[in-house]
Length: 251
Length: 294
Image (cartoon, rainbow over all chains, first blue to last red; front, side):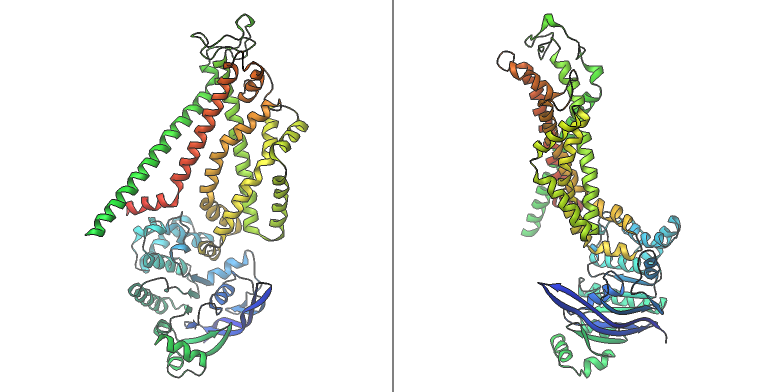
């Protein structure tokens, strides 16, 4: 299997009260084509920082990120557009991830138009992907505050998959939703993975969810990867103390 | 049951409050539009030529013929006040327009870009804010010479930092919202992000400040004209009319009261409109509106 994403020795430090805090410390991993990699850990352990660095929303201090064998660590300007054709992200707060003054359909169309697709075609595609994500086309004409959190998250997934990325990053994509909606979204993500053959980086603090959707899991603590393996291995036979504590607190 | 009753009462209170706000907004908006129409069609409305002198009828008290009286050159005060509306309101709107657009663009640029350029521009704005505003404007107007357009430039020099600071603060908070990150991931460039995603989300507070500033700017323009650094005679302008009449406050008070009342009413009207614009754009009233729609 070829690697969609390869991350090597990634480091990131933030300045906090005149001291440097190492948010991500020497993290390396790879995601294979069609694979779903889970990233778990407590709040503040550096999961979202990794997502931001991989999507180039945050600058990388040290290390390298390769997307389909293309080093994207220092890519900037218009070349980033090509990166975003291959990587997309679903955010934690669905309603906040849409501009409150723009209709959902228009929000989905934006990335399509930026990729050079004509307005009319983009409009039709936006509606098509809303339907793929279980929303009828009337949702394209609604504003983010006029739909529920779950519906908005579906629209946000539609926006992310509309340009057919090879990697979808879900940064706590279900934590702001209630349990039933969470189950629906996970089911949908599983179907999309099967139908579109995308790879996922699934960031969560919920081990049960990760067990449900991921092929492989990495446990993160204080900016470093402490353990990785299949969900069953990690949950049944944890090696590290931190992983044991994490599992005890959930199950 | 009890909670349903409380809920329905809350909904009714929300609706009533919102309806009242909207009604106030429309009333003030109509009044302001009327005022603007009077200013726009002033030359057609005025009963006399505002610059025509008639020394035989100088300093006449208000009468049926001259409802606001006449000034020391026998010019009809009503005609001059109506014509003065054109000059004063034109200058105030032009000034507010310039400082709002310029200040907002500078502020958004600084807020979005950040770093050294932001610090540099903000320190420059601090320098402008450190001077006593009116004194600085008098100095600039003095250098540029009299005339209403120069007065506008002088006041624009001291007033833009307020809008730059406001826009910068708003841009800084909007910049961190996930939808800006989502727009970046959509492949949108900085210009598109600024004009499509940041600007529309910060217009509310800027619009309110601009509306409230129309009154303030009118006062400051009147102040400059009062000092002889604004509109040049014989152009009718409320501030310079008050300046002309100040020696006659005791003998012919109407000469100063007519433009004074005009300034008072206009400034109050723009301030009230600014207040209601703020209420209309208030997210709480907005939210209750959406709730209703649902």
